[in-house]
Image 1 (cartoon, helix red, strand yellow):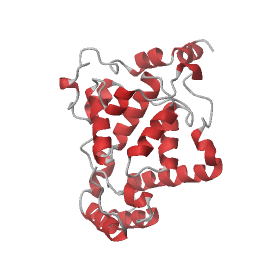
Image 2 (cartoon, rainbow, N blue to C red):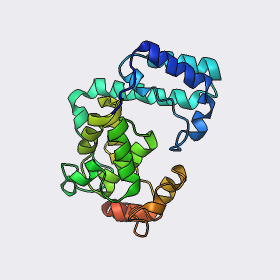
Image 3 (cartoon, rainbow, N blue to C red):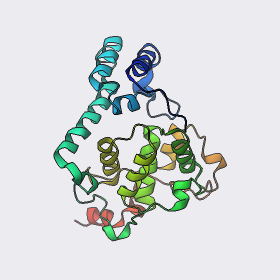
Image 4 (cartoon, rainbow, N blue to C red):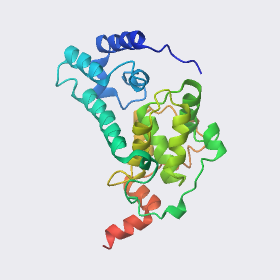
Length: 242
């Protein structure tokens, strides 16, 4: 893995490049794997850039209205850290009962070797792992898809995935990482986060499905209602027959 240059000088140069470049495209394209992201999180994570400094630079360049989505993402980072201050080591525990309706006994403790090696045959997930291990980065949307797959399709406890990310991400911080995993898992949110093939295909511009070993038997194929019924049968029954 090639580690980028650290420090405040490098961070501020990257911040300048972002605000003078494609920052105005951020809100509209941030969910696309090829969309605009700032790439500043490692410098914020290690204190080379203050989040308030980044916020002020973006707002000064774009104005409050245009910068609102970017500023809201900085706000989430601040929120995760405030929660961490409150919960401490409980950040490794479910902060609320799972919203999936599934019992904890259904979930495994460890990630399988093929998942960690990126050799599952699912081209999308294997590509995300390859990028993570090689570069220490993963697009935020890909992080959500991967976390959802690990927890809801493979039925592995979110803590195992959170540890995997912490071991590889250049911007890894326990607050943003663990609470994001809990948000996906439904242990720090009112519902579990899932996605389908159409969603992944849309935001990746179809780059994965055509060459995938599972293209004719994709686990993510279906409507959200169909996937919810498959992944969370107890929850669906409870909602249908309260």
